[in-house]
Length: 76
Image (cartoon, rainbow, N blue to C red; front, side):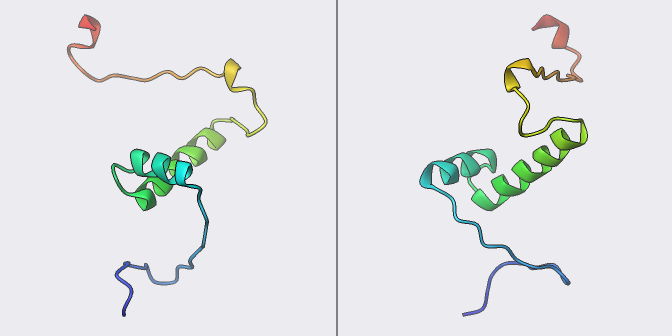
């Protein structure tokens, strides 16, 4: 049976084994798709790495700020 995945040319694969709890989290992040959840998680990990957050940092001392582009944001 042929693979249904759409592998980009010149790409390589990677096999990763996740626990059931990790798969639930990835499906939640990916709106039902563990694969998409993994992609989103990697993009966010890369973003946080680029802004200086490292795995050994204490997350109790990290703040997150979001920009809301909504005309009703001041009413919240």
